[in-house]
Length: 104
Image 1 (cartoon, helix red, strand yellow):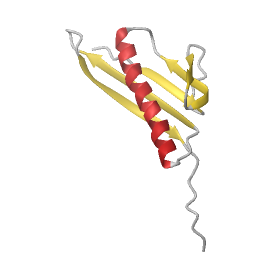
Image 2: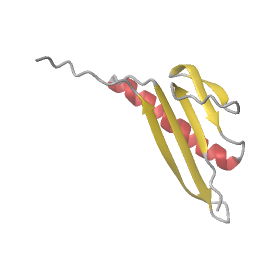
Image 3: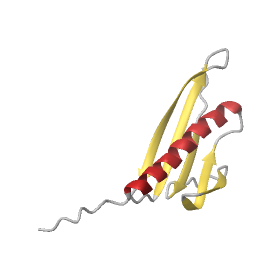
Image 4: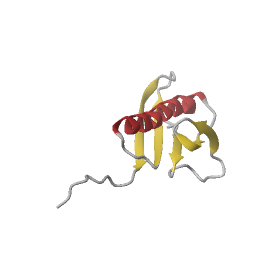
């Protein structure tokens, strides 16, 4: 069974690969990079990865957490009738250490 993997990155975790496609992004000045073949299976997984990436930026902003970069990879497979068997994803976040402000 084939798996259909994609990667989307922003900020310090953007792809530098020549085949990466660049898109504007509301959370980052540099935009996002996408590495995915153009098939329906890959686009489904790209949609999930893009949503997770946006969620990280949105939730970090709401919590006041600085985020320098995010990369989400997503993949999944399909049964013989082309029904999804599920989507798995991994998230990598580049964030500076938080200072607690405690003094001794």
